[in-house]
Length: 283
Ligand code: NAP
Image 1: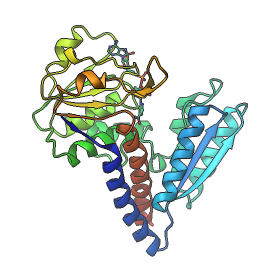
Image 2 (image 1 turned 45 degrees about the vertical axis):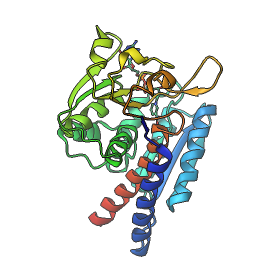
Image 3 (image 1 turned 180 degrees about the vertical axis):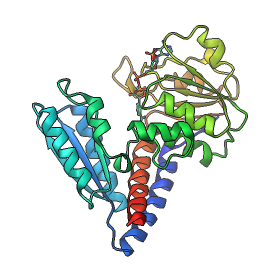
Image 4 (image 1 turned 90 degrees about the vertical axis):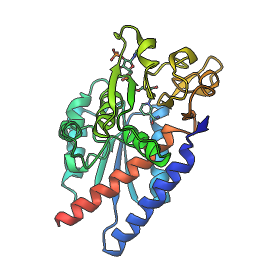
């Protein structure tokens, strides 16, 4: 079994991004990411701090807009519009979840597609579908980078994705398809799940259930990618894959922590610099 090390691969991506940032700065552009956080959710605060720290690492300027939980939808929309119009801001992200009284869809759809560094806007989702996207959703894009780095060719492989969310499962399936994988998407209504996952050469688990993927669900020699971020019965961080049981069956496997999560942040940096480059080129 080979461990796919998110630490090593994300460092490689960040190094590339830093070089792109330096090039942009030499031309007089300082890439800038605006991060909006509404309320005081502990996990969201941790993610935002991590994003800001990584911006600093690669030389991207970050702006934080921390709004109180009682912010209205109109106030939040106003901020998004202001950032959309600001030529010094290249990327905008609104940390999810946002409080229930605000319609998440309305906010995400208000972000200008060319500044939508999470790539959640329907325009960007459409580009992924067509196969000509510039900004790719960070988690699936990070997984594609992991496969590339490890020299794992997707073309012709049986790829099984467990999960069909708009953030992970669906775009993951599209990127694997664009790389000529034969893709099956499974979800909570899937019948004979184990039979399907056992046919996978590349298995991606994005379920949100601790240690959901057990050894009997994995084919000998499969590549296993674990997107999950859960806590086990002892409160320890773990993925959607029962790592200890699966690791000896897999040819390659991502750990949790230290796997896909690190790639997600690195790809956010990549998207911000890509957005800055394309906005810069348009003048
Ligand atoms: P989500 O929106 O809750 O989607 C979960 C998916 O799993 C749904 O499509 C659901 O099916 C499916 N599912 C649930 N139970 C199932 C079962 N018994 N059999 C088969 N499929 C089942 O979650 P998400 O946003 O995609 O995230 C998934 C996991 O990845 C979470 O642990 C999340 O924290 C983590 N995550 C990690 C990163 C990272 O950077 N590492 C980024 C994003 C998310 P239905 O559609 O039928 O309900």
